Length: 382
Figure 1 (spheres, rainbow, N blue to C red):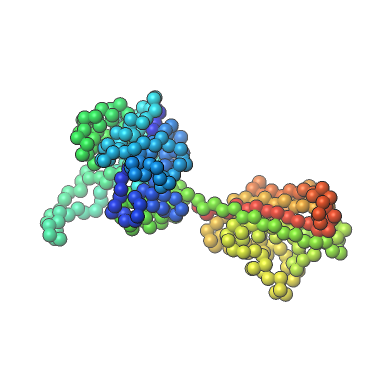
Figure 2 (figure 1 turned 135 degrees about the vertical axis):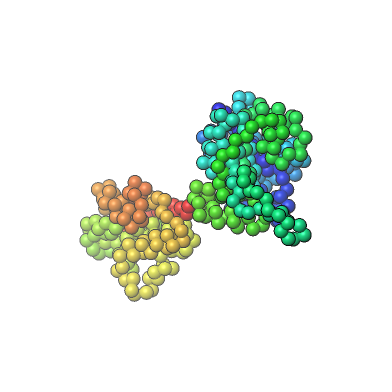
């Protein structure tokens, strides 16, 4: 079946507080609606994403332009907004999923259950069975108990075959609270599929914090924090018979000079990690004025940076290090360097690049006065 997802984002959401509608307020660094938009845009069954906006929002920077969506103006009621979305479906669309923009934690599993049910039903929607005792209240006191058998809490997306739903909307009063009510008023059967307790609707100010916590706990519904850092380091040559590069000792006619073992490659990678974290550089954490670091192995610095990243919830995604030198030749040692760096970074060696280039005899590296290194590291927090 060909599927269009209609994200209804035309409401004002005044109960949620704030200076702008709740769907455009942010959880983390993104608007609430962006999370739902991303989920449907990336779902393999969805061929068209439709975003229904309030007229006041269309010409603003409130709503995200990525992912790409067909943008239409909504109406004064939810039903009118949905009808605008239905009218914008592309030729060939057979099925629609209608979702509240204020539900940022919808999952592929919920979407799949709705779509699966549409193979045998005209409509389907997710819901959670009511398990709490329900009371009738009068003047702040309990006046009776409501039987909860057969009661459900409705969620979205609510899915339908397009043609029957269009007909149902054409015949509706426009006062129904959701599309299931519209469909039922037209005599259509709607299947209930399992919802998800995390698929909450942002309604009150407290819901923003609740949604953020749910995203933090469930990487499948969150957008990862991805950071890149770069590092650059230089060490000059002095007397000696070897150099340390990316944790490997290489015989050479001279050695690199420095307060530590002068492993220029490992230093650049270490600084790239600190940079991605916004935590300064090696000199800040291991001052060269401190004699305890005299001749220290550079792995100490790298292990500290990796541990600091882990303590802040980040893992290493990949590392890329370029060594700039005329000699020694790096090629014969690349595999050994990648193996050593893999052990210290805690990632597979195929996520690590160690390569070399010359400076065409130009500058201090071209004159063989020293070696430079530049590195880039990606950090990921799910």
